[in-house]
Length: 271
Ligand SMILES: NC(=O)CCC(=O)C(=O)O
Image (tube, rainbow, N blue to C red; front, side, top):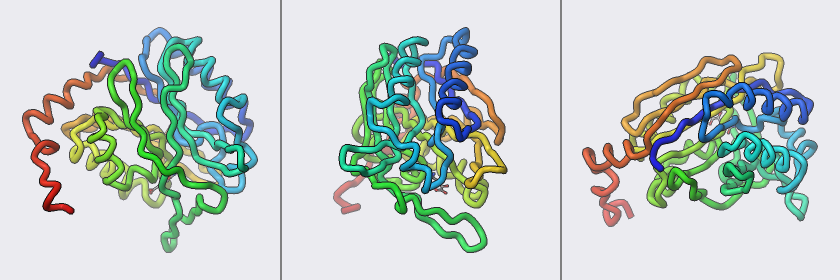
């Protein structure tokens, strides 16, 4: 199936983990009449984005948050790309992990953020995910009823090699739960999404949490959806909200046929 209706929810993050899930249940109920096929959330949508809190909020795969997300996907009969959450493994390591569930509530995708967001911009944003998080080591593309979909988390999308690999592995849509900030948001957010979309001739969906000026980390917001031609289909502002769009993934095939960038690559020259 090439056609799909994608809903992106830009929500407020409460410090009460369960309150975020209750909010999500309400949002999905309100969305139900629009019949989305896929609902997507932002990075760390149920944990304030602070390094010291990741281990506190972390749960294993299959834990209470995971079970509730699976239940919501099944209950509303949608594919749920559930932003990202802190995940604890059996050895006590914590990851920034994105889970995706199908309409039956089965996990069909999982990505552990590969590139740690460790930056220090003079007079601007400082952050060090690696203080408490362990990086994943895989490029993620998974099968869905809409074909192959790529998945990575925020800072991962700054690395063109990762997006290129997802596309060479068959992705026509890349999902990016994210949370840019007030230093890099205006400068790079839209530019990055449009660049990845144009280079890879695929749809890209970047979903952020809403801006909260009281939070330790102030998110840029601006959830957006970009076409394989590089057009911004829609971009939100910084406030809470939802956007819903019908997209046809075969448009990526059309753009790739008309402007054959992927097939015209000269790997032997780049090596
Ligand atoms: N949560 C993140 O990975 C933030 C990435 C970011 O803001 C950037 O500029 O890159």
